[in-house]
Length: 142
Image (cartoon, rainbow, N blue to C red):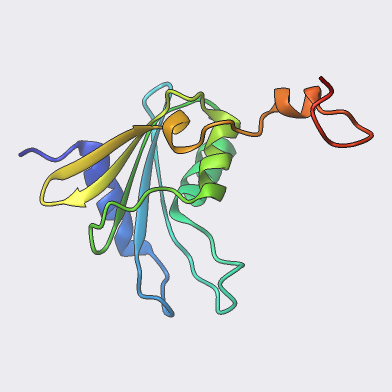
């Protein structure tokens, strides 16, 4: 089975990961609406909470270069375990992408799983969610 080129690019990004504590490498490849691809890898910190996720790094690189519309992201780990973006990364993707953003997860052996962002993150917190909130309570004004 032929591997998705975006998955291959995510695999290549694994080499740049800085993971001295967990040794769990993650690479991401993000394709923008105009077809430009940005990569990211995870960068660990000794306290873990300051670590950067591969998806975050790819998103930051794309936005830094003027892209705010994404079409597809592929994620791979060094163990090819079908890793999906965590909740924080899903929410960050939702800031720039619609529910139909394709998320490809590397299962290894040429196998992948595909999801939409909407499947992975239903009921996203969005600009509209904030606009609909009652400023006094922080809840929906309905």
